[in-house]
Length: 166
Image (cartoon, helix red, strand yellow):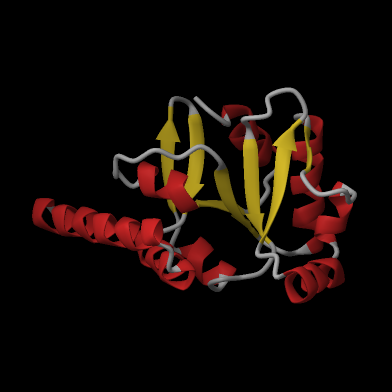
């Protein structure tokens, strides 16, 4: 499975994170293509430092020319958002260039509330915390791109099917 080592590493070190974006849509049951892994991470500094350590140990580095530890600095994230209109911070694998992880640099939805309503799924022997459909739809609505609108419709269909099968 793509990114299995990432999930294992984050889980082992007890990083608080949620899978969001295209992978979350797929894990909720929608058939669609997606390549990069989108994550929403708790911005508590210790949590971010553990997150960065796991990714660094696995061979990921920031896509932009900054230190990975800069991601843990709130003022840096705020500056990137304000001055560069940056919404996500990207990590790329040094050897497997197709392995790409995007992480939000701000809270598009309240992390604590979303984390409380997360869904844990198992893929093989790996537990993956995914954002609930409710919060995923909110994030997709904020982004508002054509693919996001399509995803919202597909997620509504998943909800409808789940309700009918309950």
